[in-house]
Image (cartoon, chains in turn blue, purple):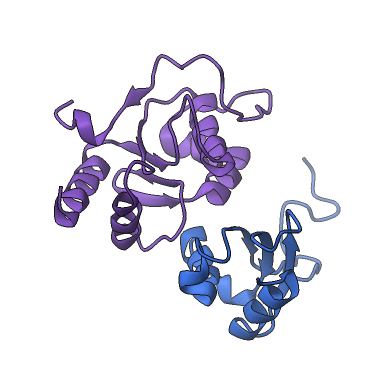
Length: 93
Length: 133
């Protein structure tokens, strides 16, 4: 029976540098929720992003891993002051 | 019915129904929480959609996943394209993207898309047995 930690490590191995958290939703080792933040998702549709996670587990999805809920995101850009933009101080509304 | 016939049926269902949901159970009686959320989101938007229960024969799910390359149920197709499973459908529902895609009004109150006890009038059932519908 897979553990949340095992799933987390496998996603991390497949997507190096990704920020991964996996929760065992029922404690039963078959319903999981994975949240993955990776710059490899940049420019991809949600479908493509989720497929990358499904591919890590392939046939185990629907088998030992009964359900895997996925949330994917691209890392947020570090905040930095914009050189130009509507929010510039002094700009009149 | 052979596997090829099932696959042809599924392909036709995707082509012929602008909004096509493959789920476990039916919109009125979903057999899984994930399917309930996906159909609940469509119900909350009040859009007309076709739904097919994949449970009656395990080959339906096998052929569907072979066709879509998506391993889990539910699967929502719009205009012949896979939109996603329940996670993506719910993210898009909450962000308003789903309403936009379907040309529907986003409900003003955040609706908890649990299955309703009463069937919505816009719903159209679809099944292997009523394929001439």
